[in-house]
Each structure stands twice: as structure tokens, then as C-alpha cells.
Image 1 (spheres, one colour):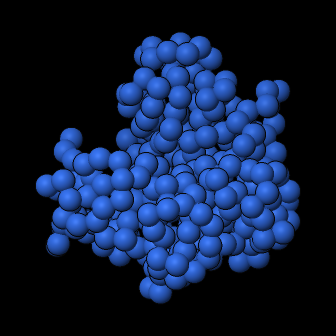
Image 2: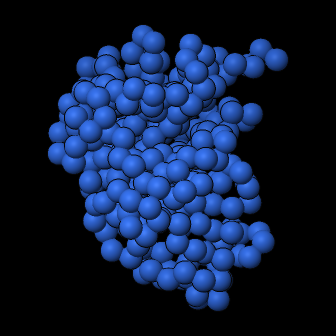
Length: 278
């Protein structure tokens, strides 16, 4: 593991290394799909662009040094904690969760134009269209990969006590039913090619499998106790999962536990994967 950029908390752009750059709570990161050597980083008040290959520099993409709320172009836009960041396969758009502004926003990467597409800034849960809807503390987001819909046409978003789904064409925001006796608060999320979702809940301290079509929620791992015990299924424990990445070829997920400062690996059931019989 090596440091790519950043040397302290703050707001400085420049050469990736040598102490020239400072990041303000880098909550989220995604690859620029048009140039996979480069990265977008979402922090407290901005999105930075990391040219890790050619120039090895960090530059301001949208936003600025101070948090707030404003749609606009480039530095005119304002954010307050970008907890989730997602790039389309074409690379022409970014979708993000603006946590403290209670909004879902979109960035046109060609024009650097920032637009709010869902949420009315009220910390609440209301299903509706676009800015008439409400979403409380949106966290992480992934594309809905269900085979029954057009690719990259909808998002799943974890928020306070809920899982939400945003239809990107109509901008309809709805609440997903979670068929479980407990009121879980999903945090980290990953989507599989099969259309299933993997959800982590820090309140119940469990990892769940979610089937969007049936709304079925099944516990995969976690004893419910706080800790960092390795084990099989429900014998394992964790404290506070911040984010997750799935490697489908290896049929596993990696989870970052910020409380215990460790990265965990969970083996997922082979039946979840499209090519599991190959």
C-alpha cells in the first residue's frame, strides 16, 4: 500500500506527493471510467480530480474549500459532505450523495455542471419526484443492475433507516421495502451482476443479502456483537463498516471497518453469481 495523494487535512491542490496536496475528509472515491488510471475524490466540500498517471497532480473539479449548498458550474457549486460517488460507464456523469444537504446530485463531467436531482434539503423520508422528494442523510449509492431494466437507469441509495431507489429518467425516488423483523439502517452497499444487493448494517452489526424483486432480506454474516472476530457466517463480528467493494470473479466482498481500523473479507454464496456454474 502506498500514498497516492494528500498529506494533511485541508484544501490544497498540486503535485500528488511531496506534501503539496491536502484533502478535507475524503469520504468517497471512484475511478474515471474514461481514463481508469485517474480518480475522482469526494470530500467535505468538493470533488477533486487525481491524474495519477500523466501529470501526477490533484486539481479541483467542482466545489471549493468551504461547504454549503449551491448548484452551478465548477467552483460555483457547493457541497456538504460527499459520502457516495459513482461514475457512469461512459464517464460523462457522476452521481453523488450530498449527506448534510440531504440531496442526490449529478455532475456533467464535460461541462462540470452540478444539478440536484432528488431531495428537498429536508431531513425526512418522502417518496415523490425530483426535488419534491425527501431523503435523510444519504450515504452510499450503486446502480441497479437488475436484468429487467436498462443499464445504469436507476440507483439504490442507503439513507437513515431506509434503502431508497431513484429512477434516473423520471427522477422518482421511492422507499424500498425491507422484509425483516428488525428496523435496520443500511450503510455500505454493493450491487451484484445478478441484481442482488449486499448491505451492511452497523446497528445490528450484520451483513445482509437483499433481493429487490421480492424485497427479501437475509442475514449472511455477523454475530451482532461488536468486535473484530474472524469466523464463519454468524460467528464473525465487526464494529462499524464504512464502505464495501465486491470482487465478483473471486465471489467475495471487502469491507472497511473504521472503528477497528481493519479491512475485512467475506466469502459470498456461489449461487449469487451469474457464472457460478461455469
